[in-house]
Image: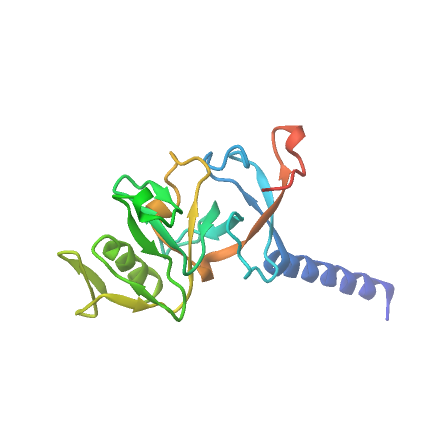
Length: 211
């Protein structure tokens, strides 16, 4: 084989490896909001581990596709606060609590994070949230009338989702670019876990571990 051909093959292999690494192993993303301070600052660029990211843990800072739209992908960054099957409590002012004692959270109402294979209870206080999830991510026709959720014209008080979901929030609670605004984050929208800051205007933050 001629040296020139070997060089071309080597370059093509290098490009292929780089593309595969970016697609399936690690990627670089920009922090779009100020809501993750002090962990992450707006405009910083982070390395994201995409490799087999299925063991999501509470407290992980993740990158995910915006679940509020089916249009061109827009990536967001947030912290996982609740896993599929968890029950959270939310009041009318969108205050969030992980407490399990209802006496500590009244008048907050319990909301179950949908878990694939397990029925999610539907009540008047989460009917609209579930309607949005079903129409955007489950491919169903759903509407709410007088606090009752109708799926394909039939009233329902429980739903078995086709995939699992997560509750993601900003570290700064005053920033509402999180699940309080767009609801549950579907599993198929997860991109990966943020690991390191590789670019920042502050030299002291370069290569800082994301946590």
